[in-house]
Image (cartoon, rainbow, N blue to C red):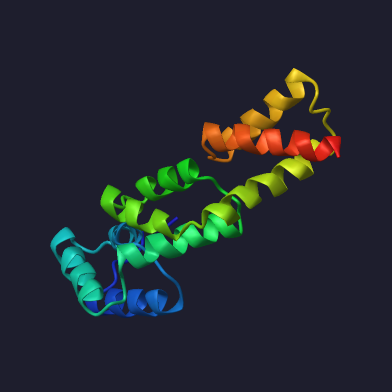
Length: 160
């Protein structure tokens, strides 16, 4: 494998502008790309600042889109979303603001839908099966109190 030839700053900027025009990206992802392309740290900071100034990159906008996608389409819980955003080096205050995008009713309904699919093969009168659902909810990033409430709702639904 031959080492890559570094690209120019202008070419890197053009690539990132094109990339950001197609989808939301956070500044940490773009900085990693610049490092991978062999751009010097000072030049990389200048390029990132240019992208931020020209509204190509906005970490709050990225975090809000990330939260909406993960809880609506992937049915992730808050904890899993928070960990994923922290891995992308999004600041805590930005994460807190982005979590405001979560509609509590849709959030709970997502967990209920996951539980109903999972509980089809389980007997919710058995402690072990309820424990499986509980652990499943925690693995998806849901909070303990919401998981317990959803399990109680599923048990009530199963009795009907």
